[in-house]
Image 1 (cartoon, rainbow, N blue to C red):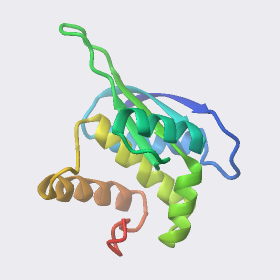
Image 2: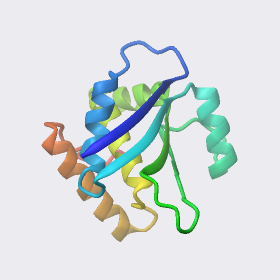
Image 3: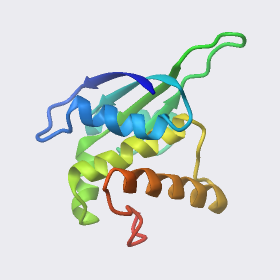
Length: 153
């Protein structure tokens, strides 16, 4: 798998995962489905996350990860799959609340967002079961515990 990752750090936050960690996590999610992929991961503060979440999802609050798939024009083949916006303040708060490692929760949000870029969703129960199963498998392969173990998520 060949992945090209544009990592944009748009806010200050202590102990962010490294570029290599983000590449590893994105590669884990994408390599099963794509031979080559390009994506942007933007680390954004709560204000930017809230603005985008409000504008695109109608939810006026910051969120952990937003996924913006790239939809190529007909007849154009590009490896670009889209953008992820991840808010470290929300990820940190969730990791504390759910008693999870900050970096492991970041891994989960990265994989979760990448799966959305590939077309996975969790709107209905069957789709949620499928998506969560894929997430659990990929995270286990990285040595990370089941993120849904307490059903708090």
